Image 1 (cartoon, chains in turn red, purple):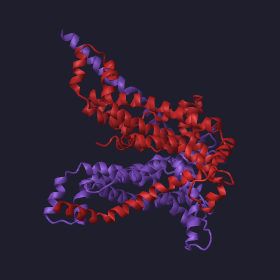
Image 2 (spheres, chains in turn red, cyan; image 1 turned 90 degrees about the horizontal axis):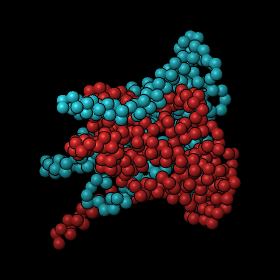
Image 3 (cartoon, one colour; image 1 turned 180 degrees about the vertical axis):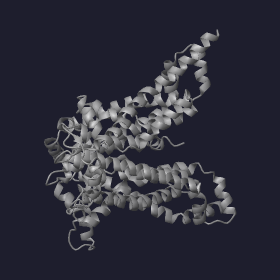
Image 4 (cartoon, helix red, strand yellow; image 1 turned 180 degrees about the horizontal axis):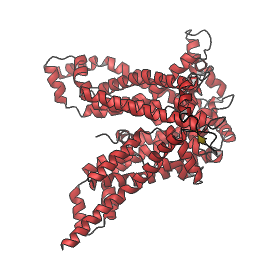
Amino acid sequence: MTKKRKTSHIQRKLIPSYIFLIVVSFISVFPLFWMITAATNQSVDVARGRIWFGTYLAENFRNLLDRQDLWSAMGHSFLFAFVQTIVALLICSLAGYGFELYHDKQKDLVFSILLLAMMVPQVATMIPLYKMISGMHMLNTVWGFMLPAISTPFLIMMFRQNSRSFPVDVMEAARIDGLSELRIFFQMYMPIMRSTYAAAAVITFMNAWNAYLWPKVVLTDNAAQTMPMLIANLAAGYTVDYGVLMLGVLFCSIPTMIIFFVLQKQFAEGITGAVK
Amino acid sequence: MKKKGMSVTSKQHIAGWVYLAPATALIVVMSFYPIIQAVITSLKTGSSANMQWAEPIVYNYTRMFQDKLFMRSVGNTFLYLLVQVPIMLILAMLLAQILNNKDLKFRGFFRTCVFLPCATSLVSYSLIFKSLFATQGLINSILVNLGILEENYNFLGTAGSAKAIIIIALLWRWTGYNMVFFLAGLQNIEYSVYEAAKIDGANGWQTFWRITVPLLMPTIVMTAIMSINGTLQLFDESMNLTSGGPANSTITMSHYIYNNSFGQGVANFGYASAMSFFIFILVAILSAISMKVGDKRD
């Protein structure tokens, strides 16, 4: 009896919190809900303020395909993000592993110098990198897209911090068994650290998929454009068709939304990655 | 015997360096070398094919401080920084504090909702907000129907409201992101600390300012540095939400630099590099200040 009364008392005290959370949640979710309904409506109705699902989805889809090469952009976005994720994870996890499990004074110094790269803004390196990439004839290629983004201090730090929990005695035992150094990495480290890899993969894929400034610089050919570039082009005309635009935005958001809902825990871990 | 042991350790020693070599080389070539190149380019003038040393050598830097448009982009960026970052961090901390309460029901649901905007790309949400606040858009039709506005208002075509909308959009996109850090930080605080405060008769407000905030200081400093860093480099929103307009009144530094290097018109790599190096210095100074402030209160 008393326990029940106590809970209801606590819940009553939490009413302001609930109201606040409901308001914030509504504001957070509504623009995305509206994006989805707008994709099913005619542009005029969207402008008039219709917020429920309509019947124009097929029509908008046809218009979208007429205006932009949707499948090419989806294909490029998937290919680029996928390749970048795999290469970045391999290179940064190797480095994080090396910095933590083979650490000595010189390597610690190298690591702290690398961290300085966190402060280098993208716009500051954009011009020299553009010259470099175009000099190597890598404009409009996956290499040009990902080379500046595969080795990041953030990912290296994330793997380094998480490597602290890697059992060193397992390594020693493997060495006594005669496993080569590289095989210890691939056969022991990688499987044990899979949750770190999952978090790192989610965050890297998201970043690669959503990248805009650098792709805009390096993917000069319209045929190589990615999804964020495609939807930006959709909005650039004099008259904007809101139904078509929001359908494009929806296509650009579906992969990241799916990842968000399926791997939310890994996503949160990926964001806070290097913090322990 | 001894000799063999030596060779194994030296093999391990080499292995360590081999592991970190690719990542280190890439950062040197893709970050450190370009920033040095940017400084050199910033001392030159001319189009990208034939560039000469500037006359005087600091020409691009003096030009920068006399360029009203660049100064406006600096002003805009700092306005976004000073208004948006504090509001966002306080909101994020507040939400984390509320969601950390074990008695609260539907915690997972609320957390997912608040975190959801992070699933959209910066271009996507910029375009969503652009459409929502268009003259012929949802917000206008709601406000007119409610009688708050007499006729449709051109939110994005008016300097003041366009700036406000960029700030609102930034708050929408990034509050949940920062909340995740505070939730992680709060979980590291022992519950017994709060129990002790309760026994000592501290109320909710006192507990928040005297216990939660000091213990969260490392998280606050880190989120502040990240937010400052991100805001100083703001590009996607300025480019896609307002296109910098009306009449460049919402343009950010990165957007202006992009216009001067890869946008319409002449590619002015020397001048753009000078401005981008200015951002680099700003990021470094502001990060150093945030770290100092955090240290003091520790």
